Image 1 (cartoon, rainbow, N blue to C red):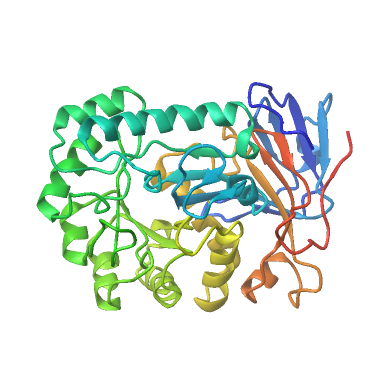
Image 2: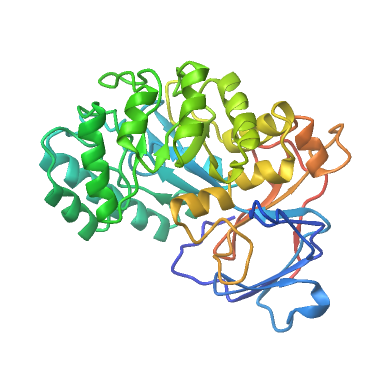
Length: 400
């Protein structure tokens, strides 16, 4: 189907006959509802069809008993420009992730740009340009309309408070991974993280061994001292810290705990379990850390959900919250929850054909990736049956 631009609006959209409504809210992950009504990209009603105003809709989607969830959020990616990554010289990777149910991506730094500037003037210019470019890219419908939140400068020695004020005034809202640049000491990082926070810029810190030339080991002491908003890839990107240090981070910090696909899977599973034991599952968020040396994983978030559910014994409906509502709340996003007033970003799923699971949630608990039948962003259908997931048992239909 032709890629619509985001300058058009959805009008009134009715989604009916939903078999399972996953809210994204970890405190109430499953809703007793079968219908969602959208107006101009915003959810205006959630409930039983008999209680919703479903008349005069521009578009009607029959979910045909499939599951509806908030669009998945990749909390940690490394875009450059356009729908291309020089790390793997691959085109269309963002659109491919859309077919994995991802509707929002959050940059942890545009670090793979060839010749990335590392002087203060250059890194600020790159961040502002990337922020503007990806916003414009979405408006043009490039990358399937996925919301790529980019423009995340990698901090370097010599930056002052006024640099962070300038970045914030220009619209930059994120820092790239602390530790990928020349700032690696805990005290120096803490000062810059505090300046960023003062001006409304959220920070993520690299955790574990080096991932690219120029990065280095960031251990638990540095992470705790820096006090960034997100403990980036706590399970390593790729090399994880020793598990006792990971436990210290979970226990001594109240910041977001980010588990990534391109990390140590064993540590990821143990971390998810530990968060449940500490009764802080609301802190767990998921990312891919792609593109990276291991490539691009269009199904990376779905794979992580299945991994932590099946091997960490976490209910599948909770695991879906790690990639939706948890990330929304930790990152200060409006999308990621199915509730009135939120953006209408949705993924329709069903169990994969011939899965041993009885239904979607059971199949994920068994470790199977679900089939994606449709993805919507701001109430507009961006793709139908996924070209990347296994085929879903049932898929929704556009009936009007």
